[in-house]
Image 1 (cartoon, protein in one colour):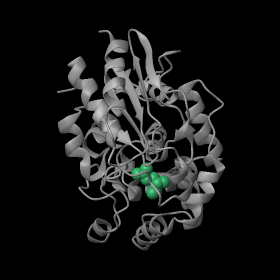
Image 2 (tube, rainbow, N blue to C red):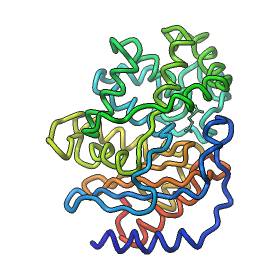
Image 3 (cartoon, protein in one colour):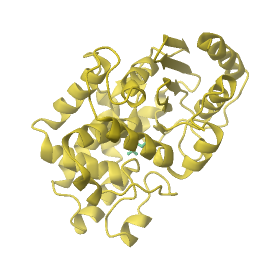
Length: 304
Ligand code: GLN
């Protein structure tokens, strides 16, 4: 497979397309990103790295961090975790409150904000230094200890986190948040403020391609069985109320973030990350979805 040729085709197709999406502005610092940024990086198990555009520039990973948080949590805990967070698609926006009331404070899945906040709460209970340990986990799976948070994005989201605070308060009233709300919110916003490039995210996502093992050292981060589960949750819940559409058009497990990034995997084949800040009305990168749809069409390599 000539991946570089296919990526070059996608690059020229994308350069002719005008996005109708909008850069996220509810976190004011994210609104400052240039809408024209575009990067794409593919890491193939057999043949290594391919990329184009701004694929080596770091951006705010936002909700892509939810996959790393779930991975770290699943490396520490077994099935008891799923008593506090379910694994069903929500069909609702990422920051929705409505289902939580009906479902007694148990979030539908770990990739909507409510579920990710429960995961943050669990990590705080299990890690000695949650922020440091989380960042070290990212350093481990990427073999890159220069990855850090953007303090401006962190401060900016802290000022506008009323919905996430509401989710935490509601879940706390049902007994599903054990730690102090301010501490959980602070840790959650911290993990979302991490910055990575498409290349770095694709490198991290190789553990979901390679049965839970790092490509570089073959060190096992998570069992094959648990990786299968994470990929299943990405497939069914990675794009909120657009998970069906992403499966339909792209056909890969993946996860988006409001920074405009999307990471996706083809187990056994490749990890791919795309970055384009303008978001569609569901909060997913508009051109990013298009580029990934073209990738699986031109390569014939989706999981379906
Ligand atoms: N930090 C963001 C929030 O909680 C993450 C949302 C996202 O990327 N979908 O609103």
